[in-house]
Amino acid sequence: MDYETIEFRSVDKGIGLLALNRPRKFNSVNTRMMEELEAFWAGARDDPETRVIVLAGNGKRNFCAGLDMRETVKAMSGMKTEDFYRFQSRLGRLLLAMRQAPQPIVCAVHGAASGIGFSFALASDVRVVSKDARFCAAYINIGLGGADMACSYFLPRLIGAGRAYEFMLTGNFMSAREAADLGLVSRVVEREELLETALELSRVMSRKNPMGLRLTKEAINMNLDAGGLERALHMEDRNQALLVARAMLEGDERSSRYF
Image 1 (tube, rainbow, N blue to C red):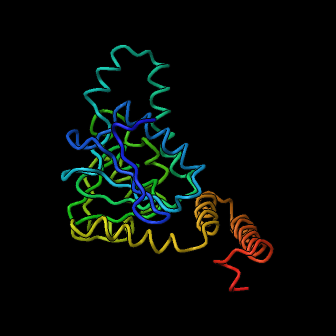
Image 2 (image 1 turned 45 degrees about the vertical axis):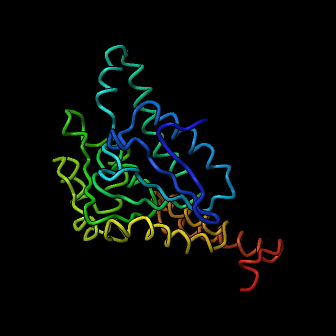
C-alpha cells in the first residue's frame, strides 16, 4: 500500500520510525489513516528486520488530536447501526494490533494526544513525552462514553483505577508532569530532545536478543491478564527455556556467550 496519512522509514539498524502524517489536521485519524494503520500493523507481524518501532506524530502542534470528527460525522449520515459498529470495531482493533505486534513500540508524544491518539500512546510499550504533552480521554466530551478505544483496559492498569476513573469520567487533560508522577511515561524531555530520546531507548532495545525482546513483550502482555502467580511463572519459564535452547542448540550469538 502507498501511504498517504502515515510515513514509515528505517532510521537505524533494526529501528523503524512510524509517523502519523496529517499535520494540517493535527494528525487526526480519518478512514484512510485507519486503513493504512491496519495494513502497517498487519505487515509488522511478519517483519523480522524491524526490532523496535518508534511511533511519533509529524508537525509542530500535536501527536494526534483523535478522530477526524468532521469526516466521521459526515460519513455517519449514511451509516446504519451495523455499519457504525463495524467502523468502531475496526478502530478499536488497531490497539489490539499494536499489542500483537512483536516489536516493542516506543511512543514519542508532543502536544495533545486525545481520544484515539491517547489510546495509541497507551497501547505502546514505552512512552517518552515532551514537556508540552497532554493526554485526554476525550470521548465523554463529545457525548460518548468515557470508556472507548481500549482506554478502560489500559489506563487502570497503567495508573491505577482511582485516577483512571477521574480522567475517563471528566475528560480532563492530564499534563506531562501528572503523567510522569502517575508512572504513565518513562521520560519527560524538552521538545527538541524528544525524538532522539525515543531513538536512544530504541537503540538499547535493538541491541538485545531479538527473540528475547519479542517474548518479553508477549509475556508482559499475557501476564497483565494472568489468573495468578502460577500462570505468570509458567509463561516466564517457557520463554526462558526457549531462549536457552535457542542459544545452545542454534548458536544464537547474542545469548550463547552467557551459557
